[in-house]
Image (cartoon, rainbow, N blue to C red):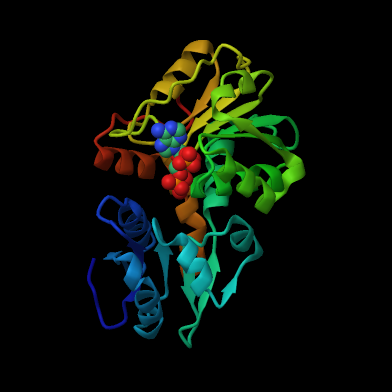
Length: 291
Ligand code: ATR
């Protein structure tokens, strides 16, 4: 890559940001399409976010991704946010207009749905029951996808019940039943889909303790955790015969609409890109959809 006077800049604001694979993914596509552009990591402390995002617009950046812990602040900073981002309560992608003003988007919802449809091609999101574990930012994008793009009933299970109740109130209470964390195993009865949005099972976090006995064998199980890629949840679900979808695809699929918003060019999520990112994660390479 050669940086020139004409090179367009994009990047990712996060704190910390060193673990982010977004630079890897977007620079892969920039190179693949021969664009005169570069994507850079932007480590920005929470207290500096407002100044940093305003400065990026003035510095001529085309746009940026926004990751933890700035997604809510990015919504507040957006002059114009798309309705989905406003309902989810988070912006993960911004686009700067010529005058530096900021338009906020949420591509996490599309990323979740794209990954799920890619990994479980037969899945019907127009009906049925989904059990969602967790009620944080990731859960908001997942639940919005399931009830707005799809038409599923959601059983929302979270350790802190009040957080699940607040998510349900924000996103459409009639589609969502809040279930106590201690009832998570019985909540699986008759479910068509199980999604883990908690950090449980991630390297360095406690394990997810969940008895899958009540889960039907034709259910689809998606873990948003991708380090490790084959979580204990996915291994147990696969051993039962369930279709499993890992979390790496969500990261790749949320990146594609962001890239398109900046460069008017929709990049593809290919097995080669997946293998490239997996190699960087130090994980064994598998193709999309494999359990
Ligand atoms: P994200 O934006 O990635 O969703 P988050 O907002 O910090 O991150 O949410 C993390 C989720 O994991 C929450 O649902 C959290 O439950 P609480 O709302 O009760 O905090 C869940 N989580 C984290 N550690 C947990 C644990 N030890 N047991 C159960 N749930 C846990």
